Length: 315
Ligand code: AKB
Image (tube, rainbow, N blue to C red; front, side):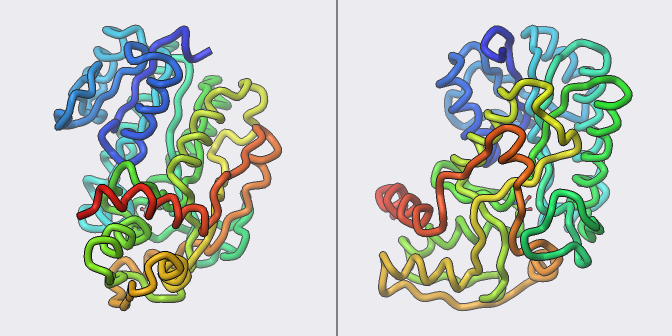
């Protein structure tokens, strides 16, 4: 389906975007996948367009220029950064989403991927094995924007038959790209610091358990949901997606199995209450049932993979 049409990835220089473009290009060929972001890339990433997702006309122009039929819209401010600039975060996260949804509503594009997040859940959500449908009372700007976006997904699907597909990403942990501005970022930083300095100061407390996923698994899930037949996608708001769950102490312990001298200390900051409002673990039964989702990596597998791959890169 996707290989016959051109695809646009908006936010292609971010943690998800850079890995996603790489995988989509391997699968469909370089020229089929147009990368775009608000800034120029630092390396050759062609075909590439500088694009502001909040500029509806600019998005339409790029889409028409390349005959785009599939859009992955990844541009967003994440949880921690969004708290520093709520008005801009709301504007970026919502206006960008509408600009892409409206292109599908007008029949210009066919299919949209838009990521949601575990941030849609809140303090009164059941924390363990959080189900697909439950109380959702996010108390961060990012979470509020993602929950609103999910409701618009459902609305555009029901009213205008827009084929929008979405996943509630947990924290993404990978070695290919750095995250930026999230509450789960510690789980990537810790590997870099462990290899470079032998110790890490965690901005989350030792027993803060959060849902996480290997970034390669998250990218595979993203491609798999987009390749699934339209009628297999029963959840049109956004699917729960799970990989693994751990606390900073458990992650540090798993790293110490490979680096016995590694040490960690804890200095929780403004991100702690954000993490405290999120689930500890996620029930992704619907994704498993509807489009056969299955993660490949658990915590031990992830730790080994991260250390093996970062060992040469981190000096
Ligand atoms: C964040 O921490 O803000 C993101 C997310 C869980 O969506 N990684």
